[in-house]
Structures are given as C-alpha cells and as structure tokens.
Image (cartoon, rainbow, N blue to C red):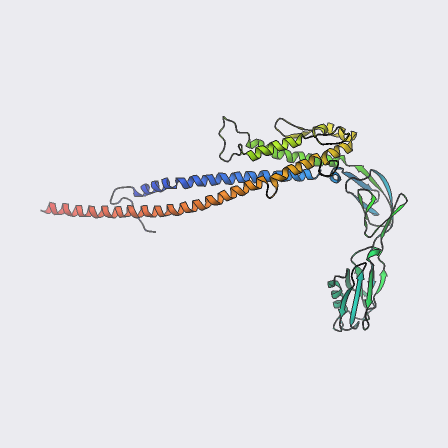
Length: 440
C-alpha cells in the first residue's frame, strides 16, 4: 500500500475528505447490513417459536390416543416370577398369574473332538439347517475347516441359529442355539454323507405357558400379551404372582401439566411479540404485525375452547375438567376440579383428551392444528426459508457494494494524490519564479 502525506502541498486534509466521502457512499450498504441483521433476528424468533410449538405438539401427542390417555399403573407381587408393564386401556383389577413354563430356544451340541482348530476333524459335506417353517439353509463344509471355522460359517449363513465352540472338560463340541424361542422355532439338522459333526438336540424349543383364572395362555416368547388386557407380562421364572392394575390418574395429570406448560411457553412468547402499543416504539425485529403468528394465537385459543363429542359424559371441554384460559391467554388447571372429574368419570375425562376413537379428542385437535405450522412445508418453515433466501440476497448485494466501495476509495486516493502532486509542482514553479523576480 502506498504511503500518502495528506495535504502537504495543498494544505487540505485529504484523508478526512476521503473518509467522509467513502462514509457517505457506504450508507446504503450499512442500511442493508442493518436490514440483514433485523432479518436474522426475526428468523431466529420464528425458529424458536417453531421449536416451542414442536414441544407443544409432542406434549399433546402424549395424550392423543386412548392407549396413552387411559393410563394405568400395574404392580406385581413377585418380580422374581414376572414383571408387568401397562400399555393403556388395561382391565382394572387383581389377577393371579401362574407361570407354568418359560419359553426357550432350542440348543444342540455336536460330537466331541480333541481340538477346535484342527482341520478336517469332521470331514467334508453339506450341513443343512431348517428353523421352524423357514427355508432350509445349506452350509458347505470342506476338509480345511476346523470346529471354529464351521461355527463361523453357521453364524454367517442366516439360518436362524447362533453357533460357538463349547469345551466340556478336555473335549470340544459345536454348540448351536436357535435365535428365537418357542416350539414353532425348533431347529432341524441334516448332515450329508462324509460329514460327522454328530449334532443332537439337548434342550428343546419350548413355549411359555401361563394360567389366568383357569385359562391357559401360550406364547413363543417370555413377553406375554393378552393374558391381562392392556398389560405385557415379562416372565422371569416359574411360580405364581399377583398382578394389580389401577387407574393412573396421576400419570394422566402429569402429562396434562406438561401440555399446559408447553402451551404457556408458546403463549408467553406470542404475548411478548404482541405487547407493543401505540405509545412505545417497536423494535426493528418486532413480529407484532406478523399475520401468521396472529393466526397461530387465534387458532390455539380456539382449539383450547373447542367442544369435543363425548357421548353421555358432561366433560366435553378442557374447562369442564378444570383447564381454563386466563386473560393473558395462558392455561391453568384447577386440581380440585380435575380430581373430582377423574373420580366421577375417569373414562369421560380420558375420552375428552383422546376421543372415542384415536384422533378425535382435544389433544388430537392440537396435534393436527400445530402440524400445519411446524411441518417441513408448514407456514413457519416457509417463513424461515423466505428469510434465509432474503438474507442470502442481501449478502450478495453487500458483497457487490463493498467491491464498488473499495474501487471508489481507490479512485479517490488516486485523484487526491494527483492533486497533491499538481499542487506541489505549481508551488515549486511559483517559488522559482519568485526567486527569479527577486534576483532581477
């Protein structure tokens, strides 16, 4: 960069003049940068609202089906015999469960061998494996194979079994276990001539068997569904245990509280944006005039007050179970009124939230209403994409302006440098002329 000595010849502060001229020329670019900053702030606000809305939708989904809303809690008298999990819509009551047997996969063993890493120990041929009603899988064994490599081939075959080498003292055997339990998944082995693995069944594939109220239920796994409606039994051992199923009104209240909190998070954000009045100056990034957010606010309040078809039950609105809207648009719950409603008509309260059929209750209304805002092609997503496109356009314009400004500054520097040189030359000529006149 060339060194300049401002105004040495002209007496002008050319550096300040150039700075003032470039500052003036930079005003449009600065204004555009300010607009871009405002745009970025608006985009972040919309993104944050979308995030909060997604959380609200998730909270609503936790209660938008009968399985989720008809929450029950289940306990067992002996978790060393079985464990139980409520899935929703369970039958209330106490059930004695007798676990007669556990489901297990088949386990088979091969003939004994002196080593697991000696080739050609079992000869060569085809080992065919058929699991349950599946297709037969053929595995080719050659004279280079050891017990260990045979086990590897079985594991890679996709035959529905798992193989390894078992050591019973001084001898080695193939150990092959079915990957699925239950009689229907019994395993058949066939060895062709020339192969002498000697595989025989030691532990048969069996079904789990439980007895409830004199009825016998069988399952190919130890996770038994249907013995108690809406409850999954995880069998641990044979024996007896009592399973008790109660209504989980506290669990439903916890989910409802989470929904109210998420609803209020969104409401507070919208209230903050809409709080500007005619006497206070709105910030440049204010969204108070955003029609999309105004529509969202109206939609949320409308859904919160919507009547839900609920048969003979008197609980047809959120307000009827104690969930009301305040003057600021936020929801609150009257726990006393909610508990009274649950005690009087648990089914009716659950139906209000989830509907008589899935997708028809108050929570499903929120889930659907929010979707058009938060989906990938929703209105908030479209708004963010629009802001992003505008910002990218601003970036391109600013880059062009900066290039022109740099060129303009370069031209000004050149022009004022030429002026200084001209002034210096004229001053030198004037001094010479004055000297000549003085000597004459």
